[in-house]
Image (cartoon, rainbow, N blue to C red; front, side, top):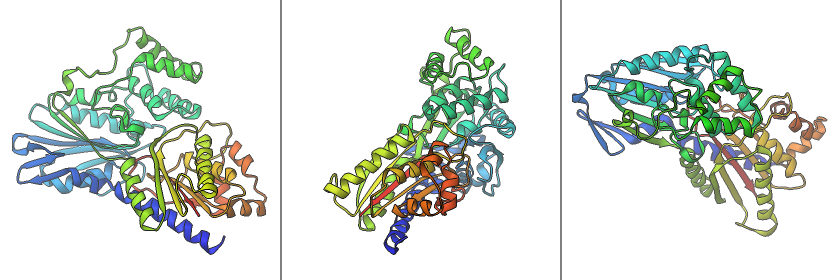
Length: 444
């Protein structure tokens, strides 16, 4: 690797880290919540804490512990009790809030134990209670509370099928909401008639409130018929457990209760605030790119689609920049966010960010002076210990020297083992935040 490329790799990492800092959960909470005497101001709305007998902190997500720590710093001894579910190892030292570590992206028994505690605490709230719910990426998997007739094993298998078929997070969460007691407005129902404030770190494209953590505190815009359409779209009707299909089919025939809709009285005393999102991270990453001397273009915070196709489109834009100086001159920095999907074709190990970089590396063959980094802001890309990967023209050269065929690794969805042998995995460790992915392409 040339010294110049080494420098550009460092630039890419610095830009990624700048984006991460912009979505620090504690800083995000403190920017939207201020306490003066007994008045808690949340995004411009005042709450007189002297009017409440109890204050509860609930929530779920990878950033849950950091968000709860910030709330404890703000409210201190005013908090009566708290319970949150987080992914394993995504913890903080808390005084008032109990932490339950649980499985993600496939739910586990610990998740059910924690979800039941959260639901019980929510149900104990009354008209003189203030409930603060903290939601962040991963909240859907971390709040498993299946409806009667659906077991944890059924939910686990359904989640695996949905992840493997390439369904989007909106589609996956539509199914999750209709199999859950607590999602799709269920937590707001349990809390009522208490006052409910929900602080949200968004990990979904478009920041749709009913999709973030599968919308436990907001009305649901989806239906059982939408669930059936998703199963049909991916031809997975026979792959999901029969009790799940039977329940969804019964719901579509109006034999099961729908999730809560927007006109329900359970949402009368609620406030929902997005405290940080992928767009915030991208804006700060753009500032850093500009500071480092790049002409920086923020493509979109809402990119979806099949990872390999999205990677090809990004490299096509990079080639245009190198050859024609359009849509901007070099040195250039392309930024994008959102969440792509991977259709599982092989038996390898990886995640959408590592697969993006591998597909991009193959597409950029013959190019010079280009660096690609893609990483998950939570520090975990798929079921791996890497946030993502980084590549440049030396990547394929190094692979050839080691006898590695990048196309074979891509076809086997084995990007992790490809980049591991090249020392090109990007590892941050758990970041305790989650606003989807950041993709950075530097072009000279």
